Length: 191
Length: 205
Image 1 (spheres, rainbow over the protein chains, first blue to last red):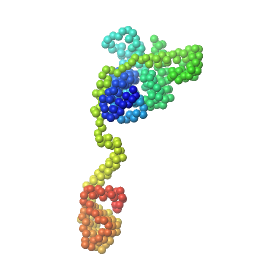
Image 2 (cartoon, each protein chain N blue to C red):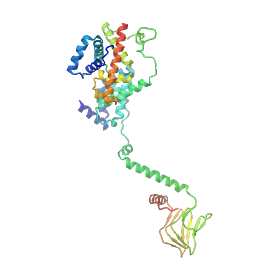
Image 3 (cartoon, rainbow over the protein chains, first blue to last red):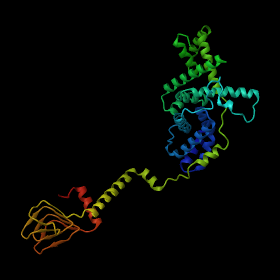
Image 4 (cartoon, chains in turn purple, yellow):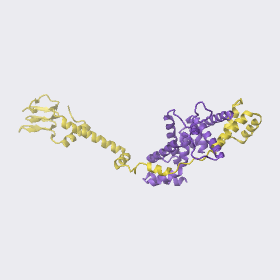
């Protein structure tokens, strides 16, 4: 796999546009998922993931190969997401609780196109709930937690993606999961 | 988290990071049997991690790759000059320097139309109105003589080089120049002269 990726990268560097298609195919789900978990919105995630790939293509000459291509790509994507989150005005989020209601979000105000079977609804709610809790994490914890548990990366890899020393990454993961736990506990109590 | 011992919190973190030793695990297990707080903390964290790992598979929307490929900028064959600049930065810097140098000196050719004489000697006759310099008969001028935008008549003797820029040199039969004499009419000649004096510092004022 690594050798295939390296060969594709070399081809792109020498001007072969089609080779880039292979790289997008390999990483699109991972990058899209990361963006989605970072920003919590599918349209924005698509936008950001596309942007990440375009940037990778344009700057391919800057990729030196001293670390994995995926690490470089993840770095581009996380930086884009963090930029987006910082620029985001405190606007209305579909996930935000509507004031004066008990846990209702704007999603509940939008009619669903096709109704889902009962258990699927439950599953989806649970997952959406996880996403909501992730969205509440400060971005620095969020990035570390997502790379660790959703992307299943090693501390060393996360350290190169985030450009931070391993102990700092570790601390952020610890703090992040503490914060998630507290949030879950609160929900469990209110149920 | 009311368990007083920070130690067990560290052990729980280690356990979740997969860095705990068998001994430490045994110690933690023993502790959790009696401490409900730590037990609850450990299991809650474990559950969250499990949930994240089992989180619904998110996949990129349809036509994602197609769309990305459409968004890529056109064949980015970098133009030759750009590649050249990246490959030979020192040569580029040298070329830029020469161009700027040449340019500023050229500009000087067109704008400097003032009559000027550069000489250390005092025994020359300068006629500013007619733009002429005369080395009188019988006199000896020591050192180099540079005349800009004017003519020179050499009736006496010059012990040094004579340079006339945009002007004529008239030698009387008795005139004598011991050094080189040079008339500069062309831009290229002039630029060459300026560069030469710039680098050797020979221009005497």
